[in-house]
Image 1 (cartoon, rainbow over the protein chains, first blue to last red):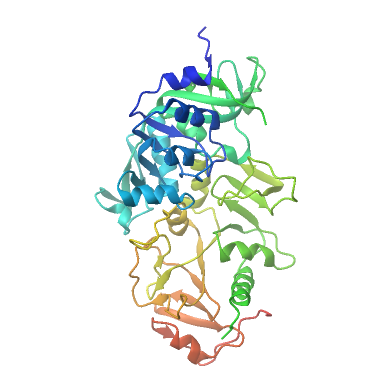
Image 2: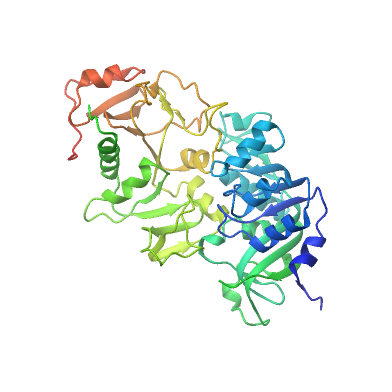
Length: 219
Length: 224
């Protein structure tokens, strides 16, 4: 059996400059901070980040923006990080804004083997620009294409050594969806338990989609 | 009209709270909508949904009892009430887009005669992103806009046609401001109530859209 447990440094070494990353978290809650700090320490460049938001300048994904590691973000919200708006206006950071529910479904579709989803959200607004529209039973929907990434960097409360995952409260958010949607999924966990140590009923994400496990700082 | 903006915001929150019915699933936006939670009528139990993945959200915890993984959609610490559920973002927006949220209360930059809401960007000025607003307005059973009637400087926010980018083409149901309660109907914007200490002339002066004004317009049933 492959040992999935690696150090932060080993995990970060796998990620090349220019990689497309999905990073879990909602305003920093549920973001793998050790992996984020690892990217900064290694000085990765030209990253594309798919995430819910760019958090705060001193928290989560916000730190990647402040350190200028990112060339493009695909997010639903940037309002809590003035640095994102500054770099966007300066033209050094490309920002694609996606409605939050649409973003969740595009990630889910990418991980679940679908080409995209149909949603009423955004019809008749600037979000529909350049997108195909389909009418079903008299109602208009936008075609929103699936998203995938080279790497998903996610955060869980608990894993076993196989990579079965349990998330904590509102730290769950995009993490379980992203786990499915990347070529390589790396999870930072607070607690690592023996195989069999998690009740099968309580597993939120099955180990099949987890490639590497990094032990994080227990809270 | 009410001169103190703080009292104005409280009046809006108190009036919106009267729209909540026992058992409703409610999503409150940031700003004035958040205040609504303070004025839930006695005997009414509602379940607050938060788009980051909670149904059954409670108030902020006592200092020292914050949990880093129990936050609201603004990133602030909250609590669970008994019966609360935590879930991922796809499930959260399944509730929202799927029509399982009874009422969403959002702030507004502009609402127009057709009931269209603009509340997520001012081109060239303010571009925070839409977050969950487009899904909420598109999917919730009832959409209530809770906002000040005018911008700073007295510029009307209820207009003939929105000049700012729309949040959704779905019409909102009710507009509650510090001057009036306005219902969006098939025939247009219907003036339902006028705020305390406010005259009909003031409402008309500060509204840039046509209003349907019934013969008798009651005062909002809230205390200052």
